[in-house]
Image 1 (tube, rainbow, N blue to C red):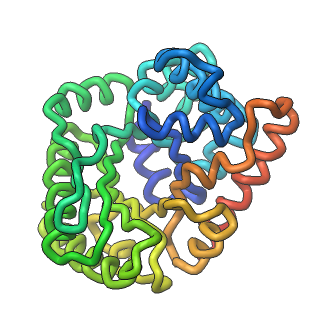
Image 2 (spheres, rainbow, N blue to C red):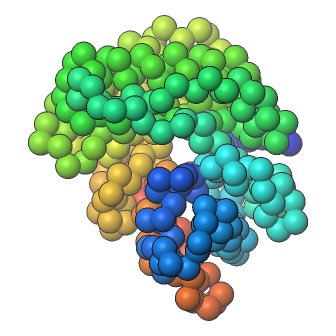
Length: 297
């Protein structure tokens, strides 16, 4: 796989990043929204078979290609499986022209100081070696901000960049994702604090090193423009965070240079009960709407 071609696509390609990385805790909800009730599977293994079938159906749909989907974030188990008879990351890049990323975090620790940090990742080095062997370009890791707490947000961003340095050491590009919960009353204040903390850590990155950022769509349009323009930032992508697709697209279109990395907003309206023609038509419409919002700025 050509890392140079992938880097060029992620730096300047038009389109968005699909988030196909629901893991253990969020999988039942994702399946239910897809029309698969919990009674349809009797074990975790069956559950993960069903979610992989959904992801494979999305990845193999005609509309899912590098023309509008520049990258896709995979769950570890998806990386270890096949799509279209090939290892998932290989299929995405060789057959669809979509740059593969891997979710590497192991979930969230309990809330402290208004944030939920990432749980420890003692096996991260081994996972990153496997990711490289599988043809993965970059990684994603999520932590959460639930309040405009200077102490908590500083700790959250520091942890993200600490792990980001470890990922960069393996030649992979980390997507740093300190998600601000969309329902908190002090969301705008939290975003101002987050902007300052991220900028400080970016300024400290060595020359030649780049990261990506995945951020909640801000209350103030173009708040994150200084990060988008920062020389250590390859791309800034937006999470939908629970907004409907229409709301997420509307907010995204007001933020110049930011592109989507939606999960729920991407799969909204898709159903296991749809015919292939219905499924493909719905996905094509969805992809086009997210693409248009991503290139609007």
